[in-house]
Image (cartoon, rainbow, N blue to C red; front, top):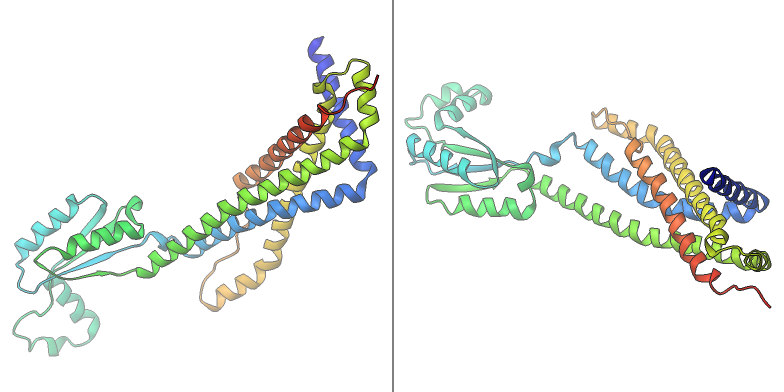
Length: 307
């Protein structure tokens, strides 16, 4: 019986909050729109990062280090160095390309086969192709590996073959940090908007609140409809933010696909994943509840029935 009474009270508070929002469509729409824009910006930035990673086709993790040994290093020593490289922390894969293999590849693909026969010695060195582990592909970790191999006396040159990948990963890291900063700042903005809206709602209903407290209504009872109002604002704002992002994806999808075809790619703009949509809706609800609770808890204590 207690559960049914409590449930009916919550339903009554929810329906009452919906009715009050419907009776003020203009102000409610403006509030929801501001919340939606604040939530749509970090969502769009998150989608930008996801599409940038997808557009590279996974090459953002294709960092290779080429270690060129000196030409007088024998094959046995090169094999020993290959084993030492495998034991190095942060190294995921090591491939030894011998001088003879390199010469055969050059002979096959260069078209200078007959000219190469005139060489008395193979001028090409042994090469170690080193690929760092996925958790060791930061700029600092790759630079540490480069210095490590450069210090070997048998090494003539160490070349990071995909410096552009490191730059791209650095750009993505900047975008991720911007996403975090934007999410925090705009989340605080959503709290402020909802808190101020609830404050005005409380002031407009001051007489009603005084009467409710006069007949024995607790602060929790009085606060309940305002909490539902905040949740509704947050949920509606999140839904509208989702719609804004989806519309942007539809509008930009065709031009981006055309641009990708010009560069010989079949890339298509991705929409927000299901998990991100769930996080967006949950964030709107939580921010709405927190903003309403803070505002209601602060202002309802100041309203007491007059004698």
